[in-house]
Image (cartoon, rainbow, N blue to C red; front, top):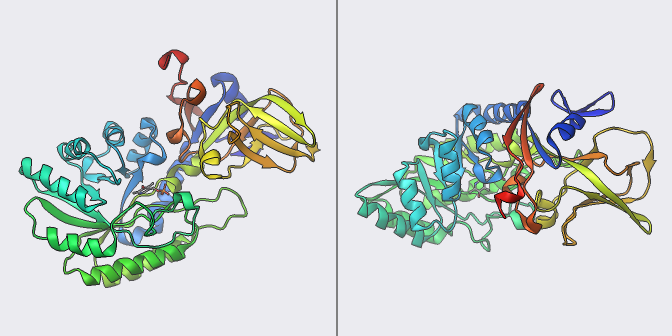
Length: 404
Ligand SMILES: *Cc1c(COP(=O)(O)O)cnc(C)c1O
């Protein structure tokens, strides 16, 4: 996004034009950014050619996943619905891994029938269940075991998943027990050790610690895993002040790991692929003054973008047309929903705003639409993919009749 003659543009398309033609709120994705993110991600880890599986839960739009597939990625899914979307988008099942703490028998059956690459089991009961189903089907199923490495990802508590108090993965003691139980199984092929310690990680050190715990446990088991799945979690900059994840250092740590344990690497990135490609264009419905504060009431709300309400996440807000005049007051950008948490951001100053003007909420590509709902019976916004001067509708705006 950049301002051309003070007008905000996404690739070559003006935000004003988008709002006029397609209405608001509107989710807009930049194809060039998506492509660049994927190329960069691959380049960062080129020396060991990992299998990169896009974490579908970060964005479930089938048309976006189709583009991601064309750019060479597989998929990491956490439900039958996500597996269906990945298959529909044309992702080769040989590049699909299935994670999640509560896969039902129906979901496991479906995954086996689709012949996906890997099911990452997250408990003893689950791996027992997979064995039971595999036996009935007289098949040998490729399974990964998700280790809980008890590593603090140093991210928001709500999106941390690798500490022992989190529900994810299997502790080291049970891990060793399960490897011994299943290493000679007729129906389970232990293919992979997997981890995922959390999301929006900006420091490489938790990853270094995670790799150390993996090595430690690998030394305890007498079994050679062909694959090590390191999960995703790579953070992005939601503002200029935030530090950036040092991919070079993460890469080095993995190289060191591989010199101790020769294996193939899997990644499951979501946010780092799609996060900064998306923006939410919204119109100001009303401006309400209250004491020294201005409420900027938008036509986008927490049902469209849940992250600020759900975990206090910060998304920058910028105007669609730049003006020189600044208003030095607290500006609280809120949605129309009947919840006090339906508030996106408060800024100490902002340019002078008027009703009916447009603003843009930045970096909403990951966990934006996929966390969306119809709360307050609000229809879900339109989704657009922008490539150069071309705008393509990749999801129609929902109509009330779609759910009433
Ligand atoms: C959510 C999730 C991911 C993706 O995390 P990002 O922070 O979006 O990269 C990867 N793997 C698993 C198992 C997940 O649950």
